Image (tube, rainbow, N blue to C red; front, side, top):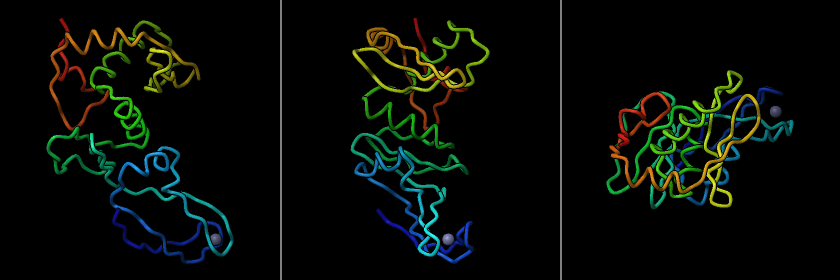
Length: 181
Ligand SMILES: [Zn+2]
């Protein structure tokens, strides 16, 4: 886990601070990434805490994620799932999906299916949340509720679908990488 020291000003008291900005993390930091602790800085002068956002790579045994709002030009790591995430919510969701050993392309397909069957304009976004009691749980952003579908539906899809890999998989492009039936 390499880092550089960056100088910035505390937004609260204006004191110059040196903060560690990491360019890579390993799986030991997954919890700290998900709860944004890696971005948290506490000023040693006024004790105020604030968050700094920066790009980094997360490298685990199974997957390699690039968190970067800027570009999709990345170095592919062989024999791992490689993904670029342009927003923090995307990154967080990919981590949860891959930590549960799921395929994110199939998950995007199911998210679209759930959204299409609920037909609720108040739902702004649908995100994978967890697997509970063999059900895949999706968070319905905007109405602050959950929706679940049986994991067996996922398993069946994974078996039947033709899936192609890509470094960017999101709700807009997933259709190009999965063929069902
Ligand atoms: Zn301060």
